[in-house]
Length: 232
Image 1: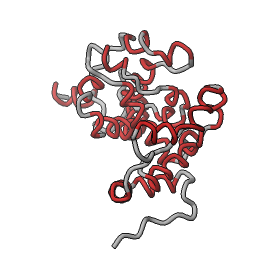
Image 2: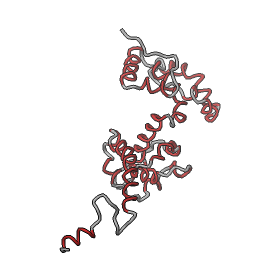
Image 3: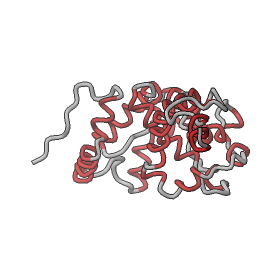
Image 4: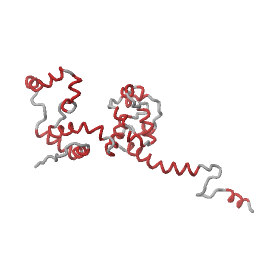
């Protein structure tokens, strides 16, 4: 037997197991099977237009925790921006059923403080969109459907207490008094009507239809019997 023949006999087959590490084939197979699912989530975040200025920061997150240390939501809830950034970068699919991302209210403190120019607030926006698309996140946005409907019909969202009765109670009698006298106060100050002119409303409706907002609101439970405005 020549030296070359002996080497060939000792070498593992190209597609066979690695005799030095019998777990290598198992690990490689498992990694490959999971990588595709992970990359789907990572690619969706990286390629979202909202991440344009934060792509490199997202991919180079150093897990320093500065985002969490300054986050108001993290102080009072189970929401942890640093963990969201890590899980998003790993493509962790459990983010798509994680309710904690809805505690973020986009103050952008994380973005302003991040040394890598990452933005967990924007990551949350992408993840929330995916949750709504899958149906899981609808429970978090369906309460805003009425606001979207009025924005479409009137050109603006109106006053919060119309959609969230608890707000009027929380803000107390001064709020109720203000709402009751608002129109008279506006007239006295010469501010005119509360809502935009009809022409402006039509422009808003066109934008909302062309961008898919109308269909989006219908998909989360709004406008069950509503059709797009008919324009000449």
